[in-house]
Image (cartoon, rainbow, N blue to C red):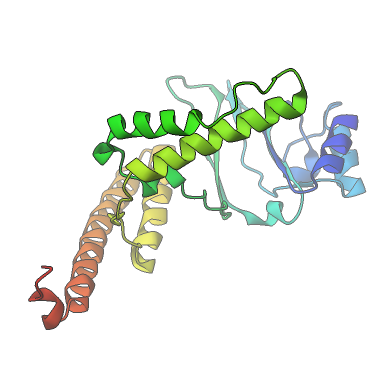
Length: 247
């Protein structure tokens, strides 16, 4: 109980997924066991919410129970959709796999400054020479016993390396090799994953046929995206640019 409360105090936007070995009658189980009373109290207090899905996640000798739970807080909890369970792998009985979709994004990773430099064209002999000239400007009589002097020497060394680097490393012109997927392709990617999970869960030929049909549609859609991207590129190149001296 205290763990959930501490987690909520640290970050009130989280999800917990796993085998809690608890059963809750209100959430789809056949009964509520002793361990199920603890999360039931948290649900009543509104600290967490549970995905309302009554699919059983454990099966053995005809006995089925829901032991896997998806707990979370809002607004992250409302982003979870398409909760599904899959048959056990390699055995007839046991725990079933739990899968779901969550519609969230991540902040884009900042571009590394190294990408703007062409290291293959660097003149390292000139770099060592320039760096040596810069380091010779340091006053060797300066004592490095004090913390302020050590910080000053560290800053001087860093600036010397940066100056030598910018002088011998030419900048590169990055070329974009990727293109943005169309809405149709994005939807087909999601459809392909859903049909694959549904096929593996049921194991019937209809699910298999739906999966391969969605796969073919996705391949054709990606081909159309590449063709459209090439057409946009060619149309952006006017006659003057194509026949200029630079080309």
